[in-house]
Image (tube, rainbow, N blue to C red; front, side, top):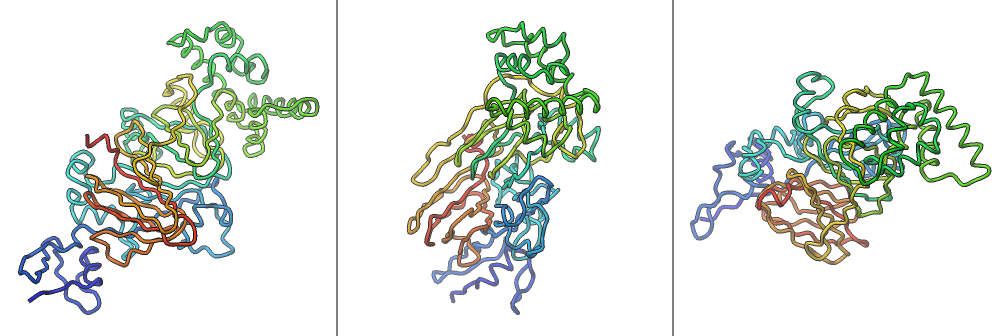
Length: 462
């Protein structure tokens, strides 16, 4: 005799709830079977379910406020109410212990659920063997209303050393390469400017030249663009370290002089974009050394759909706009300016690569109609961007690793053999998709559906 498993019992099986809706359900879902009309025993679909997740919101000071923040809009369930004046900075989707995602149906953390269910089947054998029971990537949405700190993320060896030395500050031992895909116009500082541009700064910005020091300024002014190499990097490191370690009084005076000079000169000439930027930074972080340090970095502007990859030990600071970001699962940040948080200046100045080149702007690779893939050098992650017109559909083929899907705008439906509900998908919905699961996405609202997928880098499996 054929038996059927109801949606409520499937949900209970997936979440490990012994009973739901008066049903007595075995606690070992992995061994639950369904008998077909032909008499064949099949493992229940609930053993590999597609799950709805609730992301974790971070209310950092630089985030946008409720009416102006994409993070706030996506996290609509974060019901602070109309009087909520907290900044909504980041939405985390993943298993990092600082803010793990939870199962929408039960509130259990995704990290605990994966550990209890056994990661190999859900994450894929290769992923579980390489990274254990955690997702190797952390997926985020950022709403940047004011500049983030001048910062860098350590490589794997330095991350282990920093975590061992100062675990309260550096809370995990993993590296943190990352990639930001712009959702709106997005601005950032990233990497050191060229030798020629640095010479221009030393010629035209006396406040920076003074803090760098005469000896280092002379060395840099004599450097040749084609030299590249250790010599120029050594000069740059010494100059940048002199600037970043200058006394608070010296920095305050230099920033005051810079502000006064630029305000006067703006009346007789048009300020450069970098000069306009530093005045804006000074309004956000008065008397901060990061205002002066901005002259050392490339000023990058991304259009929606463009991406920026930031490797280990590279200086950067996000300035404004909204993006999706994916990274190795870590929260290690070494900061040195434009922040009220702890500054580890000596570590930052000693860890940087001091490479001088403009960062590559990634525009993704079309993998099928409506889907663009961004593939960074890091094996832990990649990002797909799906722009689906209303009435159209796309099938995301099974991959041997886990994925997280985020509906950014629009509405529609997500179909998979192991869905635990009708699969309706709308703005802000987040889904965990186990390894080896095919997903079909249908857009049905009045406008296009914009959806992002984070997963393990496809090159890892090749």
